Length: 174
Image (cartoon, rainbow, N blue to C red; front, side, top):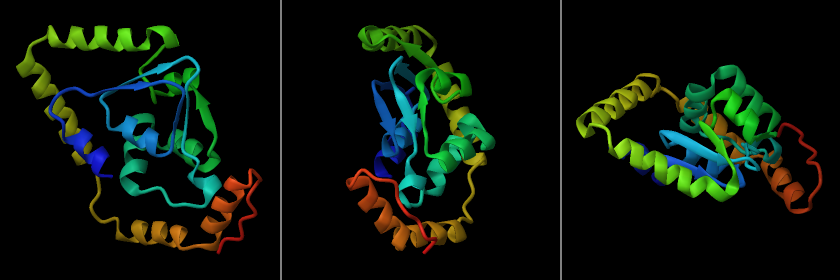
C-alpha cells in the first residue's frame, strides 16, 4: 500500500515496464503508473477470488477507473489472467512490445516526454491526479469490513492451502 501511494504521489510521469507475469500486488503497483508497457508474453490478473482473499477498495477503484466497471468485474470475478493483447484491448496496458525491445522502447518514450514543456507535463499530471481523487470515495468502512471478513475466513485458509497444494479450492462461504 505504501509503495502504491508513493508512486501515486510522484509529480513526474511514471511508466511501468511489465515483462512476464503481473499478478495481484504487481498489478496494483502497475496501476499506480501513468502508462504501462508490456511484453507480448505478459499475463495480467488478480487471483484474489481463487484464493479467497479481499482486494482493497483503492485497488478495485483504480482498476475500474482504468478499464471500466464491467471489465473490472470480469477480471476480479473470474480471477483469470489476461494476455497482453487482451490487456491492450481493454486499456489495462498502453503498449505491447517484443521482450527484447521493452526497455529501449520505454527509455525512448520517456526521452520523448522530457522534450516536452515541463510545466505543461506537471499541470497535466496534476489534472489527472485531481480526476483520480474526484472519483475516490472515503466512506468505504463497510467495504473494508467485508475485506477483513475475507481475510479472517475459512475460505481464505482453504484458498491458500489449495494454492500451495496446486488443487482447485473448495469454498464454503465461511
